[in-house]
Structures are given as C-alpha cells and as structure tokens.
Length: 301
Image 1 (cartoon, rainbow, N blue to C red):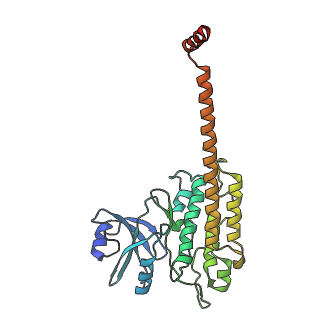
Image 2 (image 1 turned 30 degrees about the horizontal axis):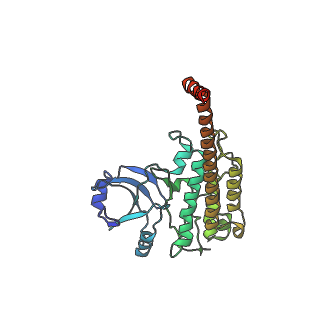
Image 3 (image 1 turned 180 degrees about the vertical axis):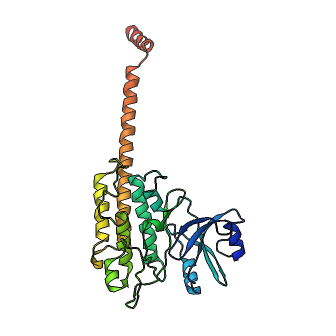
C-alpha cells in the first residue's frame, strides 16, 4: 500500500470479505479487519456520519507513534470509510478484563500509561489546530505487537469548545469530566480527567483495581504511590488544579527513568558480586599440583 491511499468501496468490500471481519465498534461506526491485495492488514472504520474534507485532511496530518494513524480513506456515494494502522494485540480493555490474556504486569501498565499520555500530549500541544479526544477509555487504547499503546478514535473535537445548546452528552460516563457535564465546556483538562479515570481502571477510584491479585506484590510501593498521586491529581474536580498532559508525561517519564536507573544499579551490584564470588572460588579450587610446585620452588630458592 502507499503511505496514504484513496480506495474504492469495491476493494474494501473484498478485503473485509464483504464486511464480515468485525473487530470492534468505534465512536463513529463499526471497525473491520481488512487484508489488502498488497498483503498488508489494516483496520477499516465505516462511518455512520460523513466527515467534511477539512476534517479528513486534519486527520491525515496527525502522525505520532502513540496514535493509531490514518493511512487511507474511501469516499463514495453513501459510503465513507477510514483506513487505520492495524493493532494486532487489540484493546487495553481486552487485556484488563478478558481471561484470554495474561495479566499485565506493573511495569507494563506504567509504560502503557506513558504511551497514552504522549499521544494525548501530541494532540493537545503538537497538533495544529489542537485536538481534544473527548472519549479516552481503555477500549480506545490499542496495543501493537510490542505492547506499545496508541490512542484510537481521536478527533471528535478539534478545539476547546462550549456548546450550551447540546442535548446529548458525548463521551463515556465514568470517564467524563464533571465540569463538562454541568457546563457543556469541553477542554484539554477534560481529556486529562478522562486519562486519570482510565488510570484508575474503568473510572473506579481505588488502586486495588490496578494492583490486582495477579500482580502479587510485584511492584515498587513508592512508584505505586507516585502514579496513584498523579492519577488523583488528574481527576481533581477543579480543572485548573489538574496537570496538563505535558506535566503528566514529565512525571511518568521520570518514574520510568528512575526505575531503569535502579535496575541498572542493581544489575551492576549483582555483576560485581558474581566477580568476587568467582575470584574466591578460584582461590579455593587452586590445583594441589600447582601448590606442590610452588612449594618446591620456594625450597630450592
């Protein structure tokens, strides 16, 4: 496939086996797995509402390693579809709640949180104009072969907005910013709230939901407290008291870096201890013949 393709509906119908390869339901419509003629696998999202050219163009320009990037689209009468990078490890939600998957260890959970934060930081501060996601939750976080996380279903809104005439609340309850519910004002800090709720797993405040029985104490308590403190700051009811996503990235990056340094230091100490042990063993296992020859040499002297 080309880096960004415009395709016809007939080709996508064939690639999805007549749209029978359903893999999920996004905010805009169903998502199918498609095997393209080039051999590449992509995700095809069939839109239930039509995006204008400006919206498609803005999505095309959004590229980041922690976003599920747009790679093509199809726009024919009555049919509008977007093509995205295929994430073969599925959603974060499936790993957290499905018995098919092995439980995520603590280190991986922190790395996934950092990946999500970096994706949101790019949408808020790197995209022009800024993009607000409006529906951050574990089912909208997808994982690649290396278990790197990417944000999906982004772009419900392109800028901070107030819609006092809106009848329906957009987003997922449990993750929604209380300020948005009461004022209809959706801002970057609303995404921060949703991120904090996602870190608390399905919006349930209480870190027993993250540090579940599968982890069996395999985590650093100080690190846990730092991550929990960050998550609670994100869900502060006052938007101005919440950190920015850039602040969140800095905190999580520091935690990951400190962990790496601790492991490196521990490995260095272990290697030094092994070297000392080898030296002692060599002294204790010195050959008797060598000892005898050394004694003869001393006698002849």
